[in-house]
Structure formats: structure tokens, C-alpha cells
Image 1 (cartoon, helix red, strand yellow):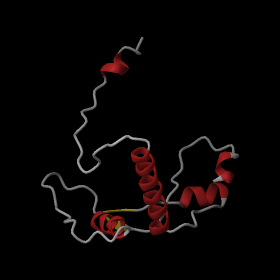
Image 2 (tube, helix red, strand yellow; image 1 turned 60 degrees about the vertical axis):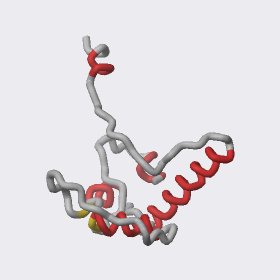
Image 3 (cartoon, helix red, strand yellow; image 1 turned 90 degrees about the vertical axis):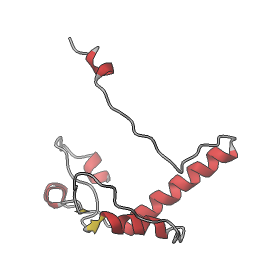
Length: 117
């Protein structure tokens, strides 16, 4: 927000919805934007992570008296529509990428190691 950009705050502040949502309900919310009912949400075995997410906006309210006014659903919908538009523009421009699958990216410090003195 403008209040944050032009403030003298140098510390990190949370900037998001304080609405609590489970990971399953977040997935269901995003799937609802195109009425996708045939997509199965499947638990992947592994370490148990967080059951839900939300932003603690206490500090940003205290520092600049501001809190997000857009709901999580509204913000996710805007983001979804933007991404969908970007993919459509890529296709129109002749770029065809399969976004239906993903790959695991292994992060290394190799490129950072050369920067150390």
C-alpha cells in the first residue's frame, strides 16, 4: 500500500489477509474459479506441515494504521484471473507450455558460493 511504500519503516511487515484458511479449503477455493469439480485433492505422504494459513497484521496496523481490505477469495480470484490472462497471452503469441505438471527444483548454493569473499 501507498502508506507503507512512503513510510520510514525498514523492518519486514506481514501484508496479507488475516482470514484463516486450511490448505484443502484454499485449494478448493482456487478450483472453484473455473468450476473444476473433477480435480481430486490428494494428500501426499510426508511430514505434516501447517494445517492452515493467515497473516498476523498486528504490526502493520500498529505502524501505519492500515490493514488489507480485500478478502482472501477476492485477492485469489484477481490473481487467478491475471495468471489465466498471462497464459492466454503466451498461447496467442505462439508459446505453448504445459502447465498441467510440475517438476521438483533442487536448490543449491553453488551460484552463491562464488559471490563469497
